[in-house]
Every structure is written in C-alpha cells, then in structure tokens.
Image (tube, rainbow, N blue to C red; front, side, top):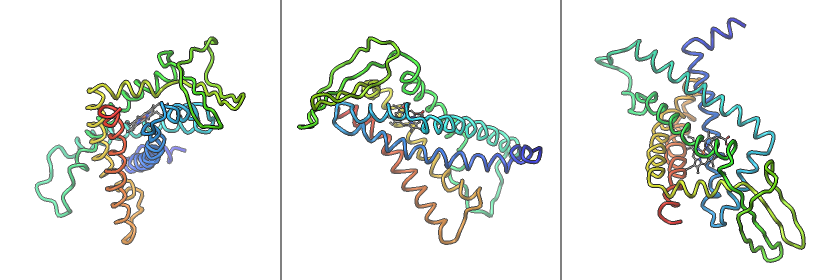
Amino acid sequence: MSEIKQTFNSSLGKKLIMALTGLFLCTFIIVHLGGNLFLFKDDQGYGFNVYANFLTHFPPIKVVAYLLYACILVHALYGLVLTLKNRKARPVAYASQNKAPASWSSKNMGLLGSILFLFIVIHMGDFWYKYKFTHSVGYKEYRTDVLTNQTTVTDFVPVDPTFEHSSTTANDVEIVRVKDIHTLVSTSFHNVWYLILYVIAMGTLAFHLLHGFQSAFQTLGWTHRKYTPVVKFIGTWFFAVIIPAGFALMPIVYYFFR
Ligand code: HEM
C-alpha cells in the first residue's frame, strides 16, 4: 500500500495521473460537444432540454459525472503542484538545449490550465449549479402531434415543488415537461461578455490540448514510429481545432444569428 502511495506522490506518478485524468477529460469534451450540438437545432430548445434532462436522471451517467468532477479536481491540483515544482527546480531557463525547442503551449501548460479551471468554475456555476441546485431555471411544456410531428411550446409552472420532469402521450399528442436550461444558455450567449469569455476560453482550450493530448501518450509510454504522427495529427486537428471551434461557434451563433 505504501509503495502505491509513494508512486502516486512521486513526480512520475503525478504525471501518470495527469495523463490518465487528462485523457478522460478529452473523452468528456467529445461527448459534451456532441450533446451540445442540439443547440444548433432550430427546435425551440426541445432537443437540448431533453438531452440535459436525460444526463441528469440516467443513473450510470450520474456515476460517471462524479468521476468527472474528481478528475477535474485531481488534474488541476496535480498540474498546479507539478508546475510549481518545475519552476522551483529550474528558475532560470537553460542557456542551450540540444533537444527540439519546447513549444509555447508546452511551456505554458500551467497558465493555460489555470485559465481553463477558472472557466470551468464560472461555467459550472452558471449552468450546472443553477440547473441542479436552484429554482432559477423554469420549465417548458412541448406538445407534439405524433401524426403531423408539429410541436408547440409553452412555459410550464409545476404545482408540485418536487416536480422534475414528465412525458406522457394521450390522443396522439406527446406531452413532454422538462427544465428549460436552453433559455438560460440562450440568454447568456446573447450577452457580449459571455461571448468574449467563451471565445477566449476556447482559444485557451485549443493551446492546452495542442500540447496536452500528445503529451499524455508520451507520458504513458505509448509512442510508436508509425502511430505517434497519427496521435499528433488528432491532437492538432481534432482536439486543438475542431473541438474548441465547435464550442466557440455556439455563443457566436446565438449572439449573432438567433
Ligand atoms: C459553448 C459551449 C458549451 C455549452 C453550451 C455548455 C453547456 C453546459 C451545460 C448546459 C451544462 C449543465 C448541464 C447539465 O448539468 O446537465 C454544462 C456542464 C458542464 N460543462 Fe459545459 N458547455 C460548453 C462548453 C464546455 C467546455 C469547453 C467545458 C470544458 C472545458 C465544459 C465543461 C463542463 C463541465 C465539467 C460540466 C459539468 C458536467 C455535468 O455534470 O454535466 N463545458 N455545460
């Protein structure tokens, strides 16, 4: 037991934990971006609200969510410890290096990670906390005629204070009542400060993942003459370009076009 503890307390152990939690967070952002694509649908928030409701009430996802929060905290904490330790160990940069010069991203992972952590705290406070723990988010009722597929939407005020969601079908009309996180997201994205915050945060995410994704593979020793260029390609184009651009497009589209 003490050997395991020693391994995780060593610098290498911390780097391994950073790599594993980082790759888990990479998986999360793919899923998160995928689900958020409902925001681009012009359906009065139906898809997005039903998706958010599913995430909150499906038990296996609840378990994964706790693992996610733990990974965010451990990744941020170990990242901070390693950054401070590296700075103490090497206060002055080497005069000459015979290795390839470190990229701007790799030299600033601590700063990039701190900005991202701050963004995640603000982001979760705005959406996740309000959605789960306050009564500031209202409800919508979606009535869909199953024969014509026409949907009408109205505000819904539950009489029962413990009401969470419901889905019923009567006389060929499906009635879905869910919490309306879509209006909160939409209102936020019409605020220019949110637009600026999200665009800056997604720029930060891009540079963090540009180095972070491929670095995790290196730390875990998963390097290979044939596959490492593929990892670098995915890290650059998918994680550092497509994912941050996809997230940044959401506030941009809402601010300018919705
Ligand atoms: C502009 C794009 C984004 C939108 C519209 C968005 C929207 C949301 C919403 C509505 C929630 C609460 C939903 C719920 O709890 O079911 C949420 C949760 C969360 N978001 Fe985002 N998000 C965006 C980008 C990001 C990014 C880039 C990250 C990470 C770098 C992130 C990290 C999280 C985390 C960690 C949670 C809490 C996880 C959970 O339990 O659901 N989000 N997001």
